[in-house]
Image (cartoon, rainbow, N blue to C red):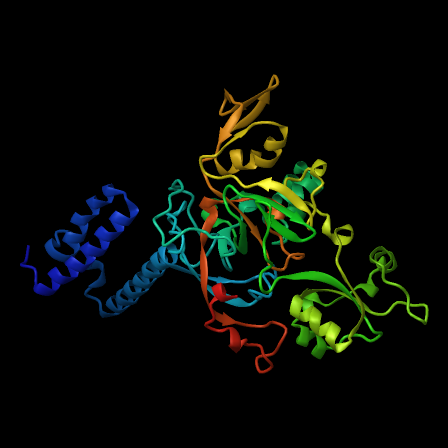
Length: 468
């Protein structure tokens, strides 16, 4: 062994200190067995770790240098993406106008503590599928159990949170991204979903960390009792203020004229949200249902259904663009498929609950209602078996009358309250699905506009989502 230089000792000290800090953070002291490897890489050099980078052939040496640089970059990006920051693009309008479609976010995983990956062997910066070749971006083995490292804090009420989609454990690969497997099964039956490959494609399972990333606002915390009454959220009996940019769907009957693109831009309504009801074959029945009357010419004025914030609503009224405005009632489009998918509860999008949000260590009685509300938590999220035999409830094969939760759960909602698939649609978000907190909008593009016509939202770049 050659005598190590001062520079080698300095690099070893830095690498060893960083590695020790990670071991302490992780709390797994078996990882200390990696210190001799670090010592050999920098000091003893018994194993020729870098020999492959120094072939005698000059052309091969150049290639090896490029491979070395690329490997280093990939490893660095992998660890940064895994433990510190992750980039995320807003794909849907569920949080508008707090976050817009086309916003690019930097998500801080240190906010709540990064998770040790369930599937550690994966290609960096790809969630679950490699583009072009359409194959899995991760290897199933090894698969590790849930563990979260210590973070800077905990999820708080009204914070915007990025998490893995809870209903994304099973996926029909050909289904639209906004239709989950469980909805398809309820709609078409399990047998058809599994056998109709043309419509649904293959059915695959995804580990927690490989499920789609969603972003919503945390409304309910573990142990809370939540209820929605006429669109107002109540937590433990107290009304929760609406988010600053909350919006709802409205039927806007114009004063007789079609709205122009300029007017829509003034209201900040995207092209996808400009829906002229008059074009529907059932338009008249909708108008009668919500109380829109014919005009003097015995016909109906143009009626748009669109999401509006409080400010946009005031602009319509102030500018005299409307004859009448009606908030979209549950009876039109707001019923739908609400968690826990049992019509006997009578819950809808605008009138939901009351529902208790499970907390770690809390115990519930196992009865018909609680099994309906929490069986998915018991089985899918906490990994138990649940059976009913001879009038008894069996958990993991043992008779049980109560159940104690091992995870905290959260209730998430979008600010675009009538156009958000959220906890009202698929239930609670377990703590092991929490990814992090958005801390920066580093880019924002508007697909409705050209590059030189507001295609880049310069006023949003480098803004803080937490302030919205």
